[in-house]
Image 1 (cartoon, rainbow, N blue to C red):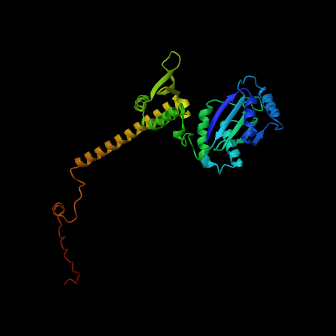
Image 2: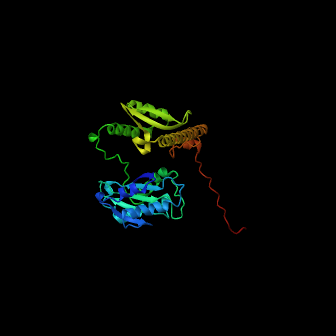
Image 3: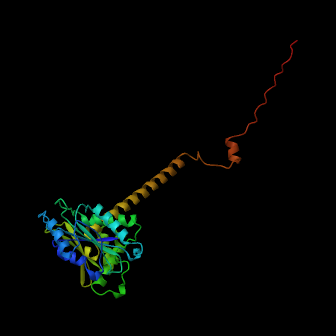
Length: 305
């Protein structure tokens, strides 16, 4: 399960796209709108958006894509349930929305259109929405027993044309290199071996890095254009995580070695006090000689004369 989030200022275009007979659209769920016609749906969205003129992009549009491997289990009812769970966790509540299913692709997918101005005129926050969405998608995928796909696992490489062919080669190189690198310097060296050059984008005239680009041959792509998981911030986070995990492993091994060496030293310093010898050996006899206990004289009790 993956989500693609877009925002805009015109409900007309997105409503016409989502409610399209050519895509064999099925409207699975809705709230706060009249489905009498396209114009009535659009007017409903626009009227409510007018309650808060401060929201420049009142159109919320999210495509939820599922793996083709889950096609049989994803009934309309299940897809509505998943979408409602997604909306609740994303804070998309108490507002107008439409959930529509399209059948123009091999993989199951739905389109959620909602008003970012809720029923009370308040703004539905989009703060860190893509990061939150990615986390929620993973949670729901696990909860509903779905197959998680990165979107590039079933790509037929022999059919790709430029620039998609080069983009996919960069994707594969990043996917293989990042897990074994602990910092950017190491990653840059690994990519260079694959013929990929790395260039960082800084903020204004500062040295603060805010983006990364990858070039192979004549084609250059922003990290996020290769794949959303390869934006600068996400790669940087993963490299930092790799470094921490490596340091923790090194520390654990160092502690284990110290304890082991210290134990050997202590045992050695005891001069063999705890050495184990076979029972009944000669050394045992010398160290602990067996002595026959003396027989006690029996006391006689009789009549004294």
